[in-house]
Length: 558
Image (cartoon, rainbow, N blue to C red; front, side, top):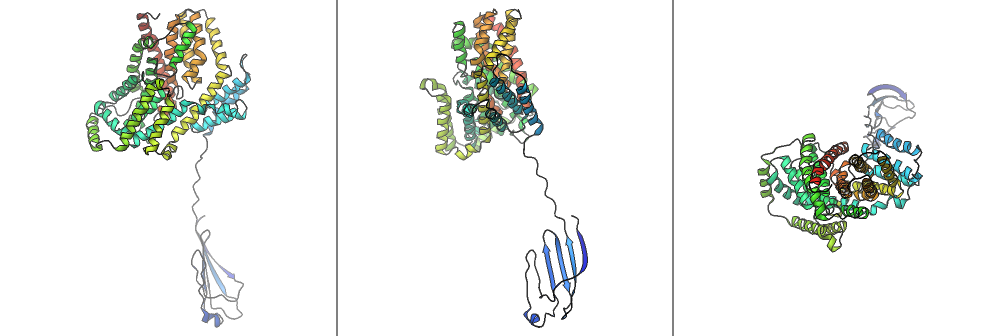
């Protein structure tokens, strides 16, 4: 409202007023008793300020008995600036509509013969959720929770079935990894180890990346959980290195080092998992299913011997490829080793909390290594380690609750595991496998071409799985049986499918245990994560079937 002033003459319906004065915002009266007794012959001034309208002032002449005074009223209205409109806090509507439309359209399409209605409905909700996770109309956890809600609302799943994966150990192991990372960084132990790495390998970003890649590969055969390796050991270390080099998530410095380093460590974790029988929890399942299908045993040395050459080539090529196509902005830092040594000197000896954190980490890693002998699984070992940190105060429960990324990751990963698991239970995966088998078998191609088609279908169907073990359990036997029936050497086919069961985890941010760990650090946007994941998958397939094929021929695998 524009500022304005006007004057008017009014008749006030009273004979007299006491002498008074007001202060805004309240009305205060000051009386002159003497003038009251003398029939109020003194002038009256009344000032009223209204904070919402303006200022009103009235002056009167001396009131005479029986006369009506003339009053002049001055009104000044001052505009009050309007509050700015609150920004929209809800979902991004276009991505939300795209997600819902995907589910509705597929829901309305009649299901193919051999597929139950429940399976088809669940597939439509699952794909709608995946579209929502890709386009992100809301945070990932919210999208996944809405997907579970749709499953329960449409009675596609019961509440117990929809939320059953919240009792699965893998999502909890990933969440616990974030709590470990909190203690690792809070105590300064992460910075200390990071500065040690930088002092040895930090003159170039590429050298730093390779040092982490081969460190993880050395630990892989001893720690059978890729989630534990990624979350409990390497995520805290990589985050500390990024922070030490001035690369933080969310402040525009991600590309200095963190984006490339996170993506590199993730993509190479699936390679190291493929290199050893004991490097991923689902690898023994592949070996067992192979024995049941072709009656041939895949031993630890057999696996390692076949995988070592293509594995080493991939470990060298993939970081270099990502360095070229998704480079860090800081490539060379010749002064970094010197600065890191100075930082270490400033830090002095290890603090008590650092010592507790280091001892707890060694205890947890020891249980991961020897857990099979001691009958202690990976998530139990992680809970024990976190308990030590909570009891000693190295990490507080309030800090754990504040780790929003951990709880968000737990929510969306568990939701996808539940939906993917029930797709298998409802028979959709079995129907898909049989359809592929009939299609490829009817093409009349050579075993090499037929096996190539089977490999691609097996590999890229992993977009529908949030677990390597679930994929192996659902499709490994069917694809191995068909490959053998089409003339592929059975032992060769079993080994290739087993290796690919790890490598396929790199195509999404939910396909293997290390994916949500590194993605959850928020250094790499989802579109780039999927895009570079697809590109690296092509490179890995070429290396493992090309270089690997030559090596396998040399060692008599086919």
